[in-house]
Image (cartoon, rainbow, N blue to C red; front, side, top):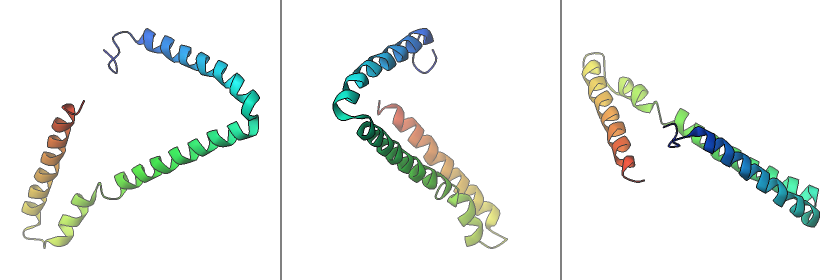
Amino acid sequence: MRAGVPNPVYATIGTGVVNTAFTIVSLFIVERVGRRSLHLVGLMGMAVSAVFITVAMALLIGPGPIPWFIVPELFSQGPRPAAMSVAGFSNWSANFLVGMGFQHVE
């Protein structure tokens, strides 16, 4: 099973059917609304999606590695290895719990 689809050929056929259906729908929408407005709406959707992706990437780049950078800054040379061990264990334990918890969200 790949991506929850028992037979990937059906996913490809489904994608083609959806693309064909929305192409036919867009033919009628273009005649009513006009090419310019339809194009601008599509561009606005792309811009909003780009903003969401940028925010998500900023969160991944920003707070993601903080546990690995902040702990060495907080502790002096002596207790630093033990503090890094506790921080790493806490970080990976929290990641594990989140991963296990999201299985039940579905």
